Length: 441
Image (cartoon, rainbow, N blue to C red; front, side):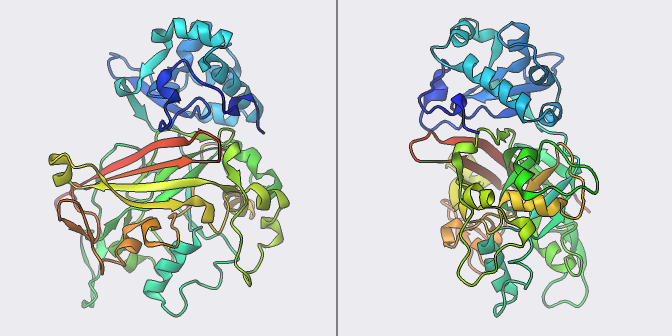
């Protein structure tokens, strides 16, 4: 629900939070987990991004600036899971207290500003960690534009399989290999088979790719055997992050039939370090994407008036790429794509509802990703497989280097933000990773 924390006139005494291009205005207040780089025995705890600083929630409680509520004391822990499982009421109360504490002109804000050095940590002095202990990870395939572009490469006459417009397609990923933004990613090795070969070989992937996605974290779970109705789904969603589902396309081509993605996907997944809460995102909800005439409506268990009215999210996802040479020559990363999440064929609520529809129990901290977010135009394609048409049309970087797929030393930086007319833009921060060479045989 909308409340005072969404007030567009709010400004913070943290001046960097008032800059138009910041990801973290006072209307955002995303959660993350951090340590201070200079601390000898660093203790990871929950912080809130505000401009170019982090509010140390635990320090604010110890200073008497925040009441020691269940939600606030949950922030002493090294993951968000305890806060996530408390439920919307506790989370909303903490958000309101944080907003008041950081607001310019409030009584709490004036007190906090006077002791800012004891509760604020400059972001460049902090080390960000994986924000959530993720028990399970599921990746969907919810962009019809991505599914159509990719399907056309392999099935020109019938790019979409018959089930696509009826069921949110997904697969279970590997939670143990999810890493936070900034952790390098080693090129995977695996089985591949060249087009002119009859047997496979084992070695480093030569078709390494990224996939730009939006992720959603489960807050409150459900019991085994108890489905989640689509009308209740929002009560189970805690917040959102950026996801880079790294993919080895040559390994994927050889192994995915008949059971789907496996080693081509589970070697690494990168997520952004900040989690934008569902409450913060409320003003940026929009209607679910309209289905083209002739497309079937969702089955009853995936259909609700509320989801049709506000199940979409007006998010933009960007992908930037820099080569090692570009960084050596101080050339900024080049923008490869900018894709609208608003065009997704399936909403996040439909993905979650479908996931639990067979009685599957979702648990606090589970992560679900949307699948590659792509639009209809070439500048809105969320992976190199689409952008280069499987390597047939390489892209050219500012240095003159070309790329069909990722090379060692390439760094992929994803950014994203929510937008709405007459409202401040709120962002997710960065989802960043550089490619390291594969281990030697």
